[in-house]
Image: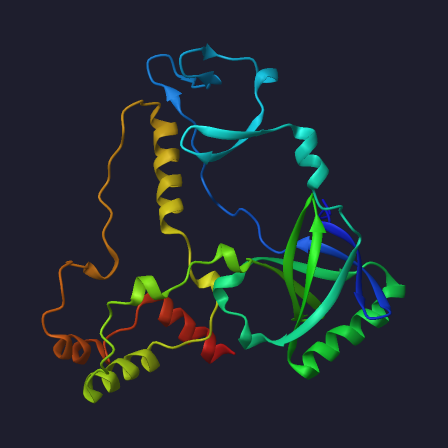
Length: 279
């Protein structure tokens, strides 16, 4: 089944308009979702809409409200909310260009692939892609879709373009409050050299396929085992911690780093080294 476009329209750069289609670059993956079940009957739990002191209420009696103080709400009808939604425009205008390194990774939210809509759009699309690549810039604009407006960044991605939605400034917490009590003094040179050497030893090209969600895999095995056993009782199995972690603080940092340097690399690092050799 062909992928469904998330958005169709045109990218506009000054007087140039390029018809494009945008597709989600991510998927839900192997996440396992649970339902709540009434154990004695095996029936799925359902929830009723209730109001304190009143009990169950009809859906047509429910409207949206924004809490302005404890227990006090501004009530809004669906029509009022619809009236302020941004019109879904079919044009994404590129209004600014920045160096890629200027955008803090904290702002990146979700990736999408951008492709030319047809053969006629391809020439202008390729020109934009190569101009971004040559200038080493990222294009910024705002995409109107499904009633809201998203800040987006566009950059080259192979033969196409990659669009990433960005968080707005008021959606990102400032780091200072979390780091204010960390000592600003520099580490000892020998400790720094050992840590740097350890990083160099375990460095390898990034390959996402070398990693898997071990929690999801363990859950799948547990679910398969219980499904086959037809048992309602929980099956608990011990799972070894990778690396034999014993917890607690490292008493002698120098000794721990020296022991780590030159030690057998972790599975992920080893796999990365193999792919490096085969490259």
